[in-house]
Image 1 (cartoon, rainbow, N blue to C red):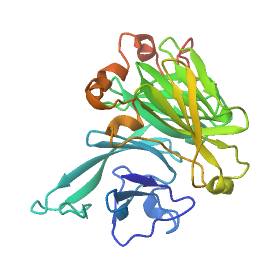
Image 2 (image 1 turned 90 degrees about the horizontal axis):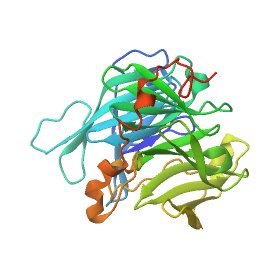
Image 3 (image 1 turned 135 degrees about the horizontal axis):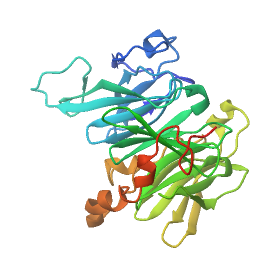
Image 4 (image 1 turned 120 degrees about the vertical axis):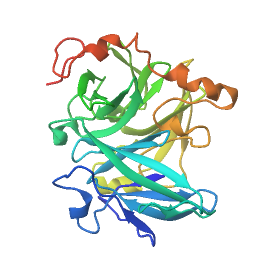
Length: 320
């Protein structure tokens, strides 16, 4: 499954299903012009083809993460996180209305089941990503030119928790690694880390001429996409990008490799290693089975952050 943002283009596919928002939105996808529709594409990696797509009830789709059968997508325009249920069935099983046929037979379906509010001021927050842990959504509030923060949202009740300030502005791609929160300091082409006590440090940065977006961690190596900064949005389609590999155990840069195609990278993952690689570090081989417990945040360590309210001052206080 791959998200397609409709702000610059519209996927043109023969097969299509629309997903109505369960909760009404003043600017949901059904009211958007035909060329401005966010979508979720269904890809067949073996055939290297698009089987179809679902129109999403979002206006500014940013990043999405998959956990089990739950898909969480961030709508930057509204500041909401939409939760979808992904399911599949055999050719003999009844197809739900939102199902698309699979190339090998059977079907896949996506159903919108819930929305979470992450901000009362979505334009300022500019929510652009999330990770999962301790029964909460950890929503990245980019905050544009202001200092970025992670907003905690209770996955069961939807209640807002603490806001955790990060180490700079314009941050992306939150991801848990060995109980800490890694994220990209995009304004410096860098990689940052948030500790449970509220402090952040910079692990590596390409410099102010660069922009980083897209992060995956496999076998203690962080892979991040880096591009020369662009002055206008349209330049993103032609940016020269590269992937950098950083050793998280030795804290050394291993290599940087240019990509053979132009364009700003939005996301990195390793789906053949594990479906959770978008929001948590993962591992190959036998170590992959222990990756979830090794990298997940520990409640005892993050207790102070979890107790803090959304408007409390102090270490985990709200940003002005």
